[in-house]
Length: 379
Image (cartoon, rainbow, N blue to C red):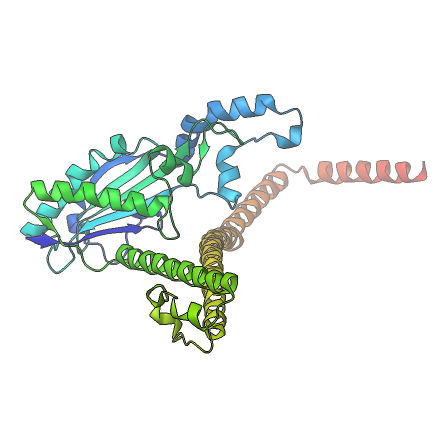
């Protein structure tokens, strides 16, 4: 059989992955089939990974304002790195690998075998939460990890960094689109496909974004060749100060068809002008590509901020609801109960005083207090 491979970046909802929170699309009767590989508290993970490096860093600081009290909070509130990343892997889809089917059980077996070797294969990704879900439409694997780099010359010598973590594992970014992350994803797909092959499943590779990037890089290379050929032709024409005979000797094959120019004996300047315009156009497109990359990065940052703000609002709303609930209980129940009890006690003591004829003692005591008060006021 042939099946696709899906590798996606997840939202990183550890409470959902561990099923402390259950969404509407979960079949609770099948939750017992889920597999939990690990589920460590992330704050403890940060202590284990970075406390020694943090101590070494702080010991070197001569200024108190450069010391870091809590590395977890520094990363959580900072903008450069995420606390952790989540990757979600799936074989096939709900139509051909449904969790309730035999093929779905085979997909779970493949993912389980793949997961058992993940940490060894990725030493710079500390996996602290990993779950195989069988209680949704299709079996899939959630892997949450903290990427870290060692031997850093800036900041902590062991610090959070996805880019550097992947670099230490041998993934070096290339041209635009061919990043450390995209290279790592391709590598992990290959690893998963090998497990699939051992279970008689062939990897069905559909049209992917990676293929699109390859085509784009090929077109860019071809365009660069065209530019080089045009610039060479321009230099040749300008240096030789062509006359009609020189024009006849120009190698028209080196001039790309995309320039839309036919070299004529009478007017070689047409070629020069068209070539210059083409060069300008290529450079302008290159600038647009760079601007697009910056925009995509900015959008990703804004999405992250929006996600954090949404979580903060939800937390504050929950706290406000709890406060209102407690306040309502105090206002409507507890205070009334205490007031009633005090009234009961007051009546009880009055009965005792009247029963034993002690009212004159209370009055005498009250008069003494009033005399002391007047005496203090005169002084």
